[in-house]
Image (cartoon, rainbow, N blue to C red; front, side, top):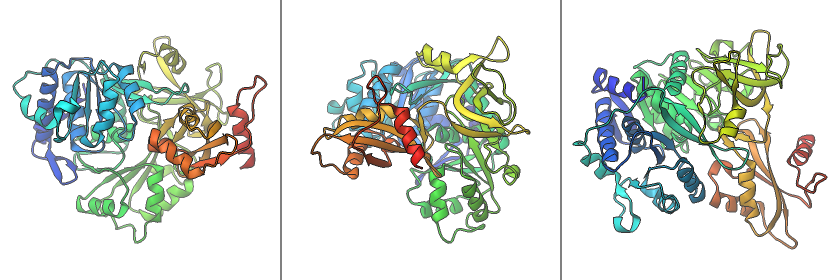
Length: 516
């Protein structure tokens, strides 16, 4: 089954039920189905075809949800981009994917327009709200597209092995890689997750995680899949306001990331009955520290805590059943239902309990590969236990205990996973080197109980340069997404180099680890 079929089915079964609450707007299943049909028809009339890539550059707004399903209904491929993404990276994604269409919010128009000018493949451009002179911006109106497409017949969108999503994630070269997920793999992941979360049409899910982050995107997909209600908020910047909204809307499910857990634990006057309908809290990205889980369980003693671990390349790897948290507080659990996870040595052979090796994931939820990157695909997807299958080599080091519960050790490569996002050190270093005051730079991850890894930059300035940590961070913030800005800047007189004269990431990182 294709993803959009869940919306079509539930528009029949739950026609007048509230499917989406976004700010002050409320939409029924029938309304989302009808509006996404209209947008899909407008996209078709503008020339978007089955298999084309469509980039959605929006925050957590109702237009993003309508856009996602409209793209699926055309038979096109959706690619969501974080709204904090800057022009250069957005242009790279548009060009790499050879996107046909770009759907953006008015507040992001300046960056969207600049990026689109660098991407000749983009022929369809829509922006939300009226923003003035359309002749100048060359973007059409999203709202008018919703009004004018109903007369156009929609094509056959395809079948479930067709590509559904292209999710860009940082790679070791400094350039993002497009993770290819089919409708079948997305549905396999969503079906497994909703099974262990025991989601039903009675659930009301609060989502403050960005829908441009696959954790947030799957909240949309899983909510509509199960006939639940999704409450979509822009962010967790005002925790008390979010908690108040959760009470008002009788929220039953609350997906969080570790940074949000830290904010929640700082809140006062939050007790077991503060959110009386809350059935579960789920967390992914960096593994929650056992002490954080313990404190959350004390604060929400009537709520199940689901600690999870995942990768963009398969969405979700493992899940810890809440009833086993006391016995194995440091574990990230076992493979999610319907999949397998095991640890192998450098030759791909399974290792015994307690032996560290690379985590391998097997299941229908595994990606098809990296977009037009056969070398990276070959490294990640390799022949598994059977000659007919490919399994995912995660690049993460793990060990399993005697009962098969898994424990994260570290990343194999230098990619930093922070706030649930993969960050390429080289991408940040390129920005640092663009600052005239900086002569040398190395970016690495340091252990952080909340973020999993925090980003630290070691920099050497040019002679007589007078620059502060805050100035370097502000420079990075102008060119990078917020989660990529280094948390710590350490000024050094020199950086360690290998015998060939190149700056050694490993040697400099080792000096940090030795000092901790």
